[in-house]
Image 1 (cartoon, rainbow, N blue to C red):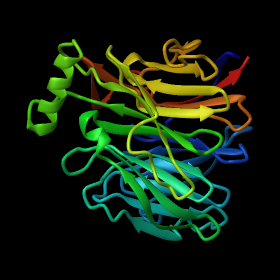
Image 2 (cartoon, one colour; image 1 turned 180 degrees about the vertical axis):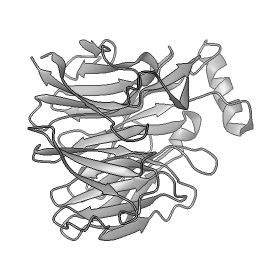
Image 3 (tube, rainbow, N blue to C red; image 1 turned 120 degrees about the vertical axis):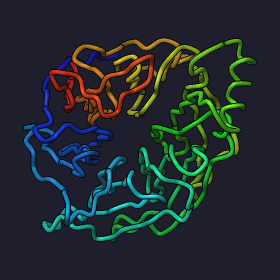
Image 4 (cartoon, rainbow, N blue to C red; image 1 turned 90 degrees about the vertical axis):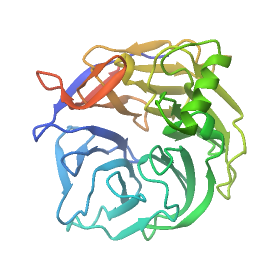
Length: 331
């Protein structure tokens, strides 16, 4: 597997902000990132790394933008600050910077739209916050010709009640599987915490998160998920797996708890047992990450925040500030 090395740093020149999610356009010519605290989405040239345009309020109607996706014609943004989750869709050919369509998920208990993936008309969104704090993945019928989310096709929620919040999502190349990362934090209250504590004891581990991992679900052409994962990988050591992206035979996973990006080779028999490359230099709290369509660039967002005892301090930025984008290239 080829090795990625650092090529470019793009600092956040506005007020400190979490830079949650990133994505490339399908043709690889542009990329974008969500700046949650600044209520902005910034679009860059993938060749020159120059800022091309900024989607911002009041016209953009953004409210804590988190999940993001570039399609052939549109920009899809999931707002974290709305409950239930609301999506804003922008036509890239429209210079006004205002949404051409807004959509609110019909599932009232699902709030934060964390990550977004698309294959054909099937749009899959992960949710990691909401009433009851249950994780879920939802598939929607999406029409990119008109920039419209038509409605939900399926929802997988029950399985995650024992494992925690869903974070990243990515289709495989064929589009018949979705890879998701999930996170289980022990909380001092509630039914869910009790269930997780039982899981800890049965797993032979005490203290700290122990059921964080990766699961793969099948998905058919009508957007229906399998009732259980085809397989899952549980990491018993401390980790926080915020994102996953599949590109060819590569899988990348962001682990901000470890301050690193882990790159895996899917051709191996047990691909997620040992990463061939771990990128940790220049990173503090990497959150979003994508490999470019041609496989030559790796785009990473770093929130640049501090952690104490594996707990993120969401509003405490390290000094000097390192909330920024990083570009790595194949060497």
